[in-house]
Length: 304
Image (cartoon, rainbow, N blue to C red; front, side, top):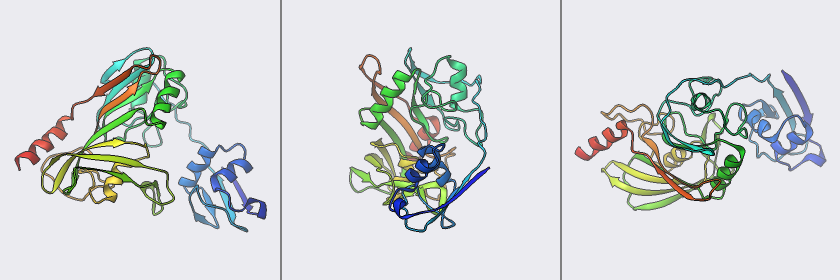
């Protein structure tokens, strides 16, 4: 473990905390600094803070750099539902219950472990623990995920997500009735200051935009189609909870209610991807049926 402490002098005031630290401690990248801040290993005046914090004169910055825990991703013979595959990309229909990539607490049994067994080549841009992973789905969210087999595909697919050329659509069952048929949630998202493992709407957060469209109404529940315009962590779940229409089955942000249909996680499914092939530029559309438990929930709501 390595510790650093320094005081903010006049030349360092009014700078973003993450930028300043990565400049002063060159072995720490800005993304690594952000992780340390989120994990409360960087304190300002002995208190946790945010990456966007603007430094003030005489602030005392304390940095604790824990030893990195080495996690390796090993191939595992786990069944994959491959929707499409060629030399550049793979489209996977991910079931609920599987984590996208290894992380502390989920070192194996992930989608990445399955992908390493399935094919020999994946892009290296995401690093050793996220080979080929262009975007991710939460453990208990099912549906379509794009995976890059080489760096060219990874860079192009990432660009399409950033420029909003690639489109990602979800279906969800949420609490409450919507009066309007469609709308937009445009609220920035950041770490929850009271619980750093969760996200929350915050005026100091990063831009987050979700479009919603009503598919069916069931009185006290609504079936929605949602489109991500940005890709923040837990974005759909946080946005819907913020407008008091939390996703059914979401035990982190959703409503605390009981439904006589067993759900293993939230009623949220990534059902459609639209993208341009990274090599040929041909537009491609992929769709996925709702999983059985979501169908059962919808059938129950329709009958009741």
